[in-house]
Amino acid sequence: MPDLKTVLVLCTGNSCRSQMAESILNHDLAGRVRALSAGTAPQPKVADGAIAALTQAGLPTEGLTPKDVSAVLNEVIDLVVTVCDNAKESCPIFPRPVPRIHVPFHDPHGEPLDSFIAVRDEIRARLLPLVRDALDL
Image (cartoon, rainbow, N blue to C red; front, side, top):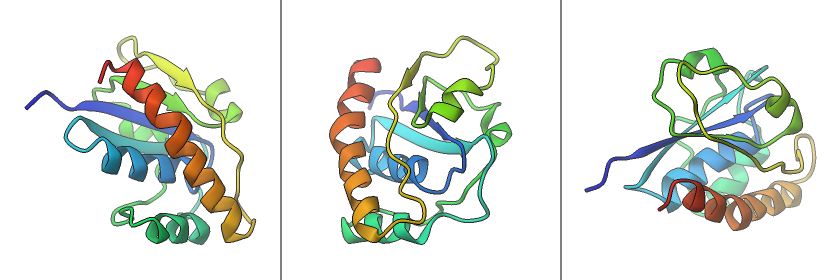
């Protein structure tokens, strides 16, 4: 079995887009990728709409919780993905050079469930191929 590649998905609040991306990457690239997510200014909880959109698609939600990027700085990261412009601008410096990609998605926070579902589907359609390419999977 190949070594797992660790992907860190960064966002501002770590309550919507980055949480959905973490779940999707861990599910769809299981055995090849270990995805983590964090925020530059994390919210108190994962948005209900994000949990509902993931659950509706049969994606895992257990263990999803917002965390500050400082909680993952000591992890060995193979790829950093920023999913919002604010996180891209304030992306931390890692102990070693880490490849980065920026793939912005609409922030559905406070919007109806349909918006979360649309962002979930866009993450799956756009982010998965880019992560596969970036990590040569």
